[in-house]
Amino acid sequence: EGQNTLVFVATDRAGNSARIERIIMLDTEAPTIGEVEPLDDAPFYYEGKTTDDVRGVTEAGADVYLFVQTIPVAGQPIQLPSVEDVVAHAQFKTTADAEGAFEFRDVDFDHPGLALGENLPQEVETGTVGIDGQQFISDLQQDEKQIAVFLAVVDPVGLSTVRQYGVALGSCFSGFFD
Image 1 (cartoon, rainbow, N blue to C red):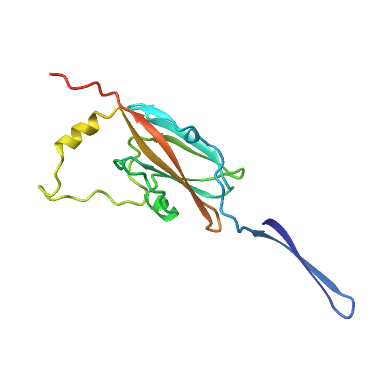
Image 2 (tube, one colour; image 1 turned 120 degrees about the horizontal axis):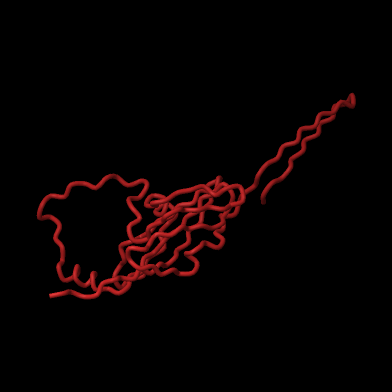
């Protein structure tokens, strides 16, 4: 695993010799994800103040993808998606530097934006999508919602790993006024 030196030495019957030395890399292990700030601390943010920098350490030269899933699944645990799902839906991408450090600046956990690979919104025919008024009011009245943040790391040879984090977003909702 890691850097290896391969040496070839050839000698003919006359005693002439040649030497070739090559350095090869062997990578058979998926990249690890070290501490990721602030996600390892299960952060809490109030609406309107949900932007933060995310930084961590992984394998040098690996591509790092960040996917913020802002639509909570009511009463259902969020399933850990595949690496391909995170890469396809990620709103942020960076490459770890020579020491393995990576950083995403100004990640908005409440409104992260469109995914990197998604198309623009499509027109929906009038009347085909309805809004449940009761569900809308119920969503407004939530004091806190949990969202999932997924980090996928893909190293230069294609090995990968995914980790899930939880982020809490607090509401400033204070009720309806008559």
